[in-house]
Every structure is written in C-alpha cells, then in structure tokens.
Image (cartoon, rainbow, N blue to C red; front, top):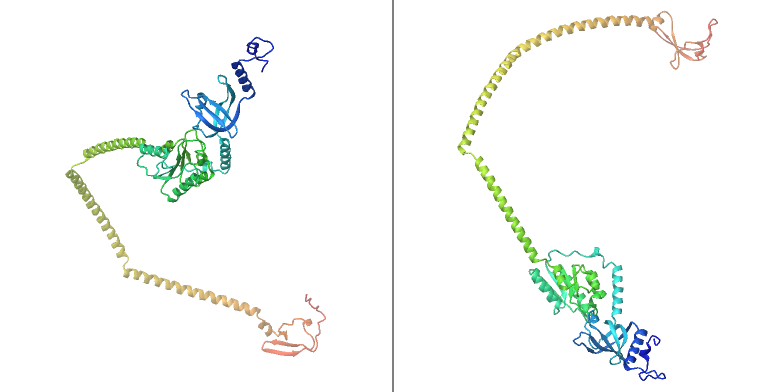
Amino acid sequence: MENNLSSSALSPTSGSAEKQIFSVSQLNRRARQLLETHLSLLWVDGEVSNLSRPASGHWYFTLKDDKAQIRCAMFRNRNQKVKFKLESGQQILIRGRVGLYENRGDYQLIAEHIEPAGLGELQRRFEQLKEKLAEQGLFDATRKKELPSFPRHLGIITSPTGAAVRDILHVLKRRFPLLPVTIYPCAVQGNGSVAEIVTAVQKANQHGECDLLIVSRGGGSIEDLWSFNEEAVARAIAASKIPIICGVGHETDTTIADFVADARAPTPSAAAELASPDGDELLQNLQAYDNWFHQRAKLALYNAAQQLNGLRKRLRHPSDIINTHSQHLDHLEIRLHKAMERCLHHLEIRLQQLQTRHQAQTPQLRLSQLVLQVSHLEERLSAAIEKTLTDKRQGMSSALALLQAVSPLNTLERGYAIVQNKHGHVISHIADAHENDKVAVTLIDGVLHCLVEEAVQATNQTPPNKH
C-alpha cells in the first residue's frame, strides 16, 4: 500500500529527507485506503441508536453492542430498497464496507443492505417448513378445492381493526354489495395470533354458514407476517372443508399459508376481488340477456303475427265448410244406397241358390236314397258272406283230407303202435329202451303199459347214430 503512494503524497511538508510527515488529509486518505483494502464487504450485527434522517434522504446512525459502537451511514440510493422501517433500538444485520470520513476523521461503516437480525433464521425455518409440507402433499393442486363462482356467504378471517378488513369490505361493496359477509375476528401478529387464526378457521367450518373464506392481513415485515408461516395455521387451512383464499401482505410477500390455501391473492383487496363476482359485469350481462330476450320476443311475436295472417287468409266461412260437408254427405248417401242394392241383389241370388240346394237335399229324398243304398249293400253283403262260406268249406275239406292222410291214427289203424318211456318220450330205436323199463304202447283203441324184458336188435339193420 505504501509503495503505491506517490512521492508527492508522502513528501514531508518541511522538505526534510530525514522525517516522513503527513498532512491530516493525507493521513485520513491513507487510513481510508487501508481500511477499504483490508476490510472489504462484510456483515455486522448490532443495535441501532442515534438514528438520523436528514433532508438529503441518507440515514446516519450508530451500531453498537454491549462493549463497543461504530458510526454507520446508508445513502439514499441504498436505503430506498429497505422493506422495513428502521428505528432506534432495533437489532439489525448490516452488509457493508468499512471506511473513513476524511473530513472529520470518523471511522464508519457504509451500509449497502440492512435486514432485521434473525431474518436468516426465519428464512431457514420458512424453507424447512415449506419443504416438509410440500413432501406431505399439502401444496398439491389436486387437493385444492374449487372456488364457487357465486358464493352464498363469505367469511373473513382477519383483525377487525386492521386495514385489510376495510380494504376487503370496500371492494365487496363496490363489486357485489349483496354478498353476505361474516367476520371471524382474530389477531394476525404477535403472541397468541397463531391459536386465534386456527380457532377462527375451525369456527367458520363448524358454523357451516359460509361457502368461501378469506384469510387476510395487511403488509409488514417477515416478523409481522410470521404467524402465517406457522405449521398450525397451514394445517388448519389445509383441513378446512370450505375453500380458502389467502390474501396476506403485499404482492412481494409470500407465506406458507399462500401455498396451502386453495387460492392466493397478492393483497387483501385482490382476495376480495377473487372471492366476489363483478356486479357491474353481471349487470352488463343481465342487460345483454335482457336485450337478447326482447329481440327474441319481438321476433317470436312477428313470426306469430305472420303465421296468424296466413291462417286468416286460409280460413273459410263456416257456411262454405257446411255446404262442402253437406255435399259430401249426399254423395256418401248415394253410394250407400247403391252399395245396399248391390248387397241385397247378391243376397237374393245366394238365397235362391240355397233354396235350390235345400230342395235337392230334403229329408224324404235323402232317406229314399239311403234306403236304396242300404238295400244294395245288404244284397252285396249276403253274396259276399255266401261266397266266403263256400270258400271256407272247400278249404276245410281239403285240409281235413290232408290231415287224415298224415294223421298217426290212420297209421295205427294199419297195425302200428307208438311206444313211449316213463317220461313220455317216443321210443323209436332199441337203444332207447333197456331191460325192466316201463313203457306205454299206444294202439288205435287204447294204451298198453308193459315191462321190457329183453331188447333184441334186428340183424339186418344198423342202429342209427344218435349223434
């Protein structure tokens, strides 16, 4: 650093080569350069005191802890980006550069960014809870309920004295003043606010009179909005059976409740617009429908009038219609008489035919015919019977002659006999009889019971083979 300083800047004012003497401005400049070089951008934590806001727009204050303090400056182009109101006594975190105000020789910290102390920890907790609830599906679009197009009753969960409820009611009065509204009061920041918000959501669900809810509050720091980053509030919103619109803070503010709610609005006023139909638009639509119905009615009346005129032209006088029908009846009467005459003529012809057939089919005539037929049949029957008897007699005589020719009795008359053993079997061979067998000998006029004493076989005959 010293080597980069020019010889003119380091030359002693007395011109002596033995002593190195600096002017005050040279010393302060060299000290500033040393500080800015060796202590570049850094973070410092401390408490604000002696805050001053001059007309220039710059901020000047002292940052201190329990052992030391340092002057700080934050210029207008930087402090305009601060999202919270800086006040004495606040614990803040500064990102800046260490410098030296040369005119007074004051050692100071030039702030480029300020945030409340503990903001990093809150942000970390915010991200952890967001990741946890996202993994559990509380942010999924599939579980979010659809908002009613025309809510019957709107519930507002917010502080009854805050600006948010006034903004919501103002928008509702402008857009749709007919919408009934119930306010469920609760604290929206500070101790106990989380429990009150959860209780208000549960109470609205228990009452069941509302079909849409708005959970809302105005803008503020992350600490002010932190109640809507608590897990209990998020789970109460997720468990609600009534659709919920979350309108917390300003457009740039985002809370866990925004992710869990069924719909997010950037501001309380935007939540009211999202929850309510536009009365002016509805009125315009109704006017358009009214005009359309009037036009349709006029057209229908015109068409009906045209149809009526056409029918009036086609309409005939009743006497003309009566005359036409009377003439038609006369023609029908003439046709009826002719039809009846034809029918009677046909019936007369048919009657004559039946009478002729009846005369030809009288009982006396029919009986005479049947008597003749019976007599003829009797003659035929007698002839047939006589012929049949004659034929039967002749057949029987022939059969009797044949029977006598082959009858065993005729054989017995010639001196033959029939020999049977005790079983009634005919004995026709010697081999069929044995000594002492009892046999029956049938003759022409009776039966002899004999006992076989001896069986003698003829010498000129060979016994038959029984097999």
